[in-house]
Length: 328
Image (cartoon, rainbow, N blue to C red; front, side, top):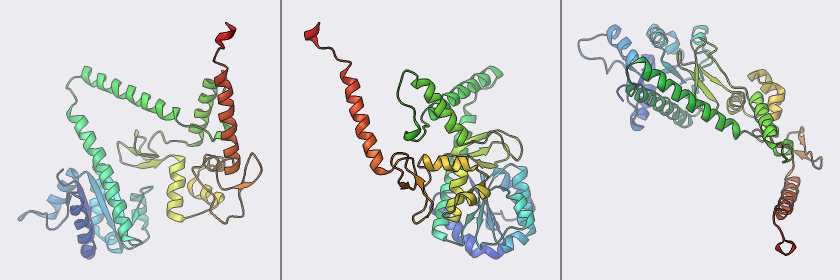
């Protein structure tokens, strides 16, 4: 994996960038960085575009200096032209200028200045994930057979596999236990209704908002455009990203910041994907006894009662399947 990451930075941030580069080396991630990797006798204008074209990921080190650097601006333009995935690392906490906000619209930035150890861990995780995806893509392309027939066959296989994996994933999606219909002869139809409701609540992006290209899933809840590298998220991941960054917030704040509807946020609470913070005066109501709860639809006591009743009913139903030989 040659020159997997291109590091774009201002020379005024050299000391910090050296530490970041050392972290990449320790993690086994190769990179390209000027000026030490520019061959003798060559120049910036020739080698930098070539290195960006060959890299897999474009690591942008953000600071006051880098936002003022004409070289960093040119490097970003080059990366976008070559449709490289950009990973911004903010080392000083500087707000983005209008130009950089335009470049990095909806691209998640890692705040290196707040907690360097945690930021380094998150950076390495993201780079490993991106490079692994890229490696799989390259390996898949290398095995493609020449000819339209072979390509069509592989595309059909891929589509079939996607449909199977999608069906398997949706089949596992369930509503909170208190909202599930009772088991009966119509269970299959009820299950389909539950899965449709779950998919409706946790909306997934279909096409790229930036260029209209196709999206593929890179991790749970995260999707990336195959054309421009733009990242988008499903409803739950949007809420989770916001809370990870801002800490506990009420439903109205979450709704305004993420654009996720109140009904969806309340669904995540009932499904126990989210939890009301300790000490909050506003709680959910247990559907069994009316007690205040922080997530789900039943309190712990009612859950225990329901499990006991379910086990008893299961045992009674199971008994009816046996015949008494003495009555034959």
